[in-house]
Image 1: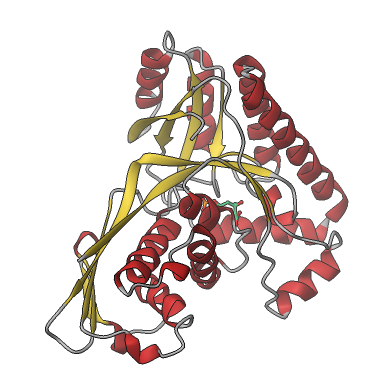
Image 2: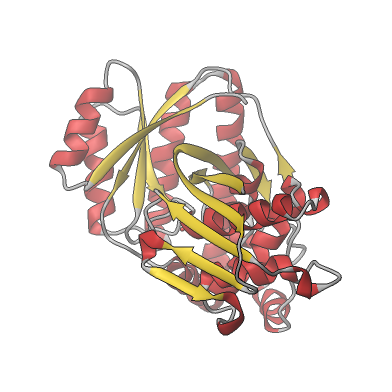
Length: 334
Ligand code: PMV
């Protein structure tokens, strides 16, 4: 029996702009995770089971549209002999809320891939780089044009400063790259030092919002009016760069200001929502250093940077303003 777990994640700065080659910062959230257990079984084929999602099926009878099967296919694609996958039961459980910006899909794929690689003695396919690349292939099926940040942070399990390798800046060229299915990955990836631990509350609006739709809407607007959107993306990138410095130098107050600013930019991209704005405003009123939506937006989660003396008040304010749950994560250097 082999077990592997992958954490959830939040994007601290730079979502959406990261799709267009700007830097973004994401960190793992270990308070929630996905776990995969692989057993050698008496049956000949491969059974996939996810009791939390009410799923149990034969791998051989399922195609890549099923997210669990897609992870197994991504792994199988790397095997010289695909018939090596047999006599297995693969069980997945997860505490990561789905479609809420916490990286549930990527974490589930990453833990399946790593557990399979370890169970079959393929250390070369269990490395962070290999797991991230295979998880990216799964993300591509479900998200269309993912930047690669989700698979990276859940596979490497550490804070990342991430820049997608995108050598194209004009919409026509970008569109041509997408049309031919060009994989715009791997990308530049750096980890960074966290000077002073950061306390972050993650509040869920309870509204599930597919990332694919908000990413598609931003792309449509960008294609219609590239100049203002390119400016907005560049401004988000500048904020992510400055935020990294603020995290490295322990300037929490400045970091908070950058969160308000980044939220405003995301509003201008039309990816916020009334529920997200209400929670961000509640965090402001209750004394948070900063707050913003996190991930694809339109629903899902927002994050608030708090201090020990404001944590309780901000948590209460978020719940009173309609959050269905609030969890806390502490960002430290790994
Ligand atoms: O909704 P999430 O947490 O999967 O985040 C998506 C982040 C985007 O920048 C909006 C898209 C991407 O592929 O990077």
